[in-house]
Image 1 (tube, one colour):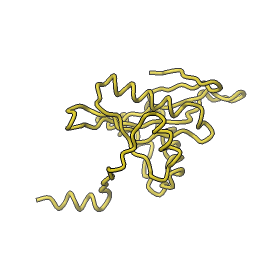
Image 2 (cartoon, rainbow, N blue to C red; image 1 turned 90 degrees about the vertical axis):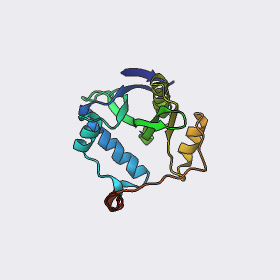
Image 3 (tube, one colour; image 1 turned 180 degrees about the vertical axis):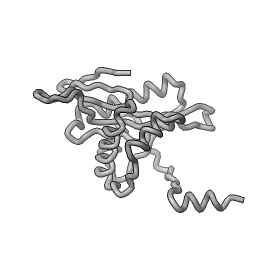
Length: 178
């Protein structure tokens, strides 16, 4: 899948990430973590990403947004954004859903339609895969993203809270079973 896209001033391509993109994905993940002030939580490595995205049991998928190389550059297209997603399941609908774990576009490239194109691409993928939902979370302080998602047609659900168990607490919960 390679999907050429453009806005008035920006040409870019969306494509499925490959094993060779793990370093690039990690760079973008670190930039996202920095934006969200969560760099202290990043434990991902290229090897972990490779196993999770392309290993024997694939847990997620990723799409990269790339712009053409700048004039005079020796490198090819440059990744400026990504979306990482996986399937979940709705018991109420008895259908799979598509869950967007992370969406990120480098600050310099925001406002060029790249985030919108990534969301639309994933929405089309959800429809093609007969998913009943396409959903994601957004940090409550991230007003620009909340406004962007609402403008795209998303409902920001005020009544739901994320529950998370990680690290030692996850180990303790698993060990406490009867």
